[in-house]
Image 1 (cartoon, rainbow, N blue to C red):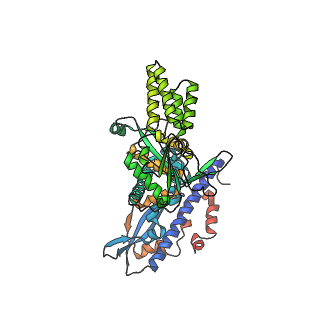
Image 2 (cartoon, rainbow, N blue to C red):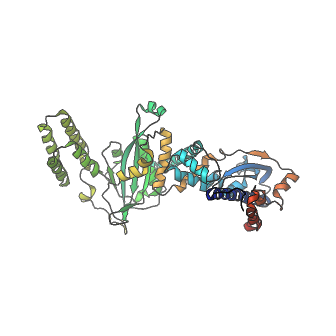
Image 3 (tube, helix red, strand yellow):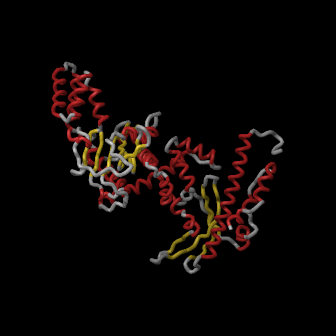
Length: 472
């Protein structure tokens, strides 16, 4: 009935989906142009002088929607002349660019779990349009660059103690760690090495129980970057100050593996640094061969007998005859000595911390290993993946937003710089006859769609009631 030759269901489904997307694009075009005409009629003619129409393309989940809207000459309060599109302002295109927000959300969500090429393929398959992996890459770089600028702005405000965060907590937990990622050729030469450490920081105000032995961090914020120590410190402080009212924070618990860049966050006596227990025990097990000696050192540290623990390691050094083992034991002694102030966990120091808010718990730290993998490692490490420094930073920013349930904000950042870079405009000053063709009451966007004769029922369905009537 549908066609003389047989169609399998998969092909039929795709063909109908394509036709419906075309109808949707035409319907959206009709609505946008009608909306623009209404704005044209109701504008203040003394402020907005009509300069004709321009065509543009809006990329949507249904496909590309080409439509025309009026451009106006406008003079601002300072006497400067410029052009303005009232429809763009009404649509919020200054915030979303000419890729629809829904499409941008799809791109940013997919790129956090799969490659640029696979993201482009999935978008092309499901969204009624062709988009290359290069276009996806360009979009991610644009979004990442805007997130970067916002983080820098927040860092500047934090330095001036003008953070905009409103969330209040007396105790803030911070955990930091690094992950080594492979670099691409050009950046390898600049970095003088095949790999570079990406720094990652998370902060949260507690944890809530979600299962028998499962907890979820609350109020989590995160940031990651390849940059230097001081720059990263300012960045993470900006991220914190953008969410938390830092004036209300009385205590900070800093958990880390002992890296020098992490200790940059120890700024005053309100910051309590603790050496991550996992990394501490891992360092002991890797070097100390004797199982009983391992248990003895860990027990002495637990009992706060730090000098005795170091003395035990010194005894092992004096009793070994192997040069490699001696070197490892000396490194372990230095590691524990350099992190002496953090060998006793914060919960065993007798600190007078405020009461835990209802529904939350103060955990003992150690969530960083899981977050390093789930935020950065799972997407960016292994499988022969190599990154440019700029490209790695931009993707890491989106991964941090995703991990803290803020990824949707990225689509709003997009347009503040992208604008019409992905569109091609043609100035068209309409004559009276041409204006009638597009602006007359008889124009029906549905009927201009090319629909195969074998699917006449689709056009019958569209003819049932025009979209312009539904819009009214």
